[in-house]
Image (cartoon, rainbow, N blue to C red; front, side, top):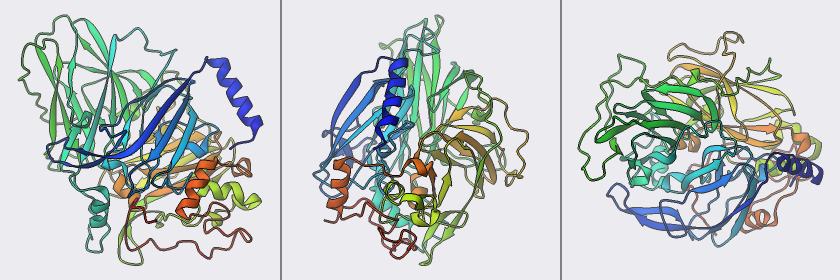
Amino acid sequence: MFPPTFKLFFFLLLAAVVEAGVVNYDWNVTWVWAKPDGFGRPVIGINNKWPCPTLEATKGDTIVVNLTNLLKNQTTGLHFHGVNQIQTADMDGPSGVTQCPLPPDMTVKYQFTADEAGTFWYHSHDLGQYPDGLRGPLIVKDPSDPYAGKYDDEYVLSVSDWYHNDSITAVKGMLNPSNTHFAPPIPNSLLVNEGQGARLNVTKGKTYRIRMINFAAFGAAMIHFYEHTMQIITNDGAAIKEQDAYHLRIAPAQRFDFLIQASESDAGNYPFLVALDLNRDWTNSTDKMSWPHNYTGYLVTDPTVPPTRNDTVDKWAPADDSLFKPYDDAAALGSPDKLIKLDFKFCVDQNGIPRSCFNNITYINQPVPALYSAATTGDNNTDPVIYGQINPFIIDYDDIVQIVVNNFDTATHPFHLHGHHFQVLSRAASGVGVWPGKDEGYFANPPMRDTVSIMPHSYAVLRFRATNPGVWLFHCHIEWHVEMGLTATIIEAPDRLRGMTFPDDQIAACKKMGTKYEGNAAGNTKNYTDTSGMVTVPPKDYNGATYNP
């Protein structure tokens, strides 16, 4: 935990802004049999139910989730995607980074403040587990919602790809030397609201806020409403100036909130189309596009009339979300103090297994979670060597940090940063090549978000201010590429992490797992720069979150 003086300041500050409450959730992680697309298989649910429940809070609330692992054969954990975890970096949730995996028959408490309002989500961040079902909406209401009064009701609309194989089987097939084209697992179907569908009852003359979330492991989704315009009001929880859109593309992990008006002249039930996008370059007119997985939902104004109409889109032309404007007109941050340039390419490890690389280095889980190393290695915690092969980047408190990602692939990829929202200063068009190295021509008032799609053979320029000490991942949010190693680690303000202590339940989980929780990446506590014992070659055999007592 952080020193008491920091915590006192933080909570007093929040108290001055809003009278906060406490919301408590007691969740058992359990196996559930489900068939959301008609094919039955085991999925991971909560309290013996699936889909998983919605977590709801109000800005400023303390959220407490008591998570008990009853899976018996797998470890688990939770990440609260989009929550900044101010002063609670140890609650961020990725296994091997800010905690040890939670073994069966143990409980861990996640406790943090909902510092920002918006549409977020939670999911397992334990070795490719969340595509098996452990995910759900996280909605934080805003007492000062800038769009309050402009809508009458709201719906959550989730989309996701879906697989008939479990995640471990899928990844085993991918991490095979015969996979010379680096092909990911291809989904079997598209789910809307986890297979429950979406017939949204609406009343003429009323306006509805749709909170759309993409839970997918791989695919983006396109959406269009027949004879209705989407008025986008937030992206990834950050308010934007209202932007009309007829088509919208939502990448894995992204969220968009938009308004849909049921006008007085509406007659009947209006279809909307969701199509699964396998991350191809939809801007390239020469590429042959096919859309094998589609879903038709409805805005239902008359429930007595069976919905029969279809919505047809001849060519998808989604709104360019990089052009959205922040609601508060916030200007672009100034010149960066630190530049992190990441070249993404597929690669092959020493055993001929396909991997993903930043700067020709694939991320490899280490014996000690990186946050624990930052807390227990004293002055050495500013040395990237102590963290092992996790693509570590050290940044100082209050730095303006610029991340540049060059995408050398032929597909579009979504990249997500933990612990921060960033400004999207530039998201270049497909095929323009690498970043030219000059900070010019950027948006003056860039949108803020936590997950950005980067076009094929192109780049993006992102900025944030480093005022949140912690260890934060930056990774592709195609889950299969995370398992291939497409991750970097930002060690933010390490001088403020020294001496940080951790909850007893986290340490108990480490002990049961037989995982070291002090010292450098290998657990060396005498000579922190001693790299012996660090993992430098990815394991040949992939077992995911399998628990081996």
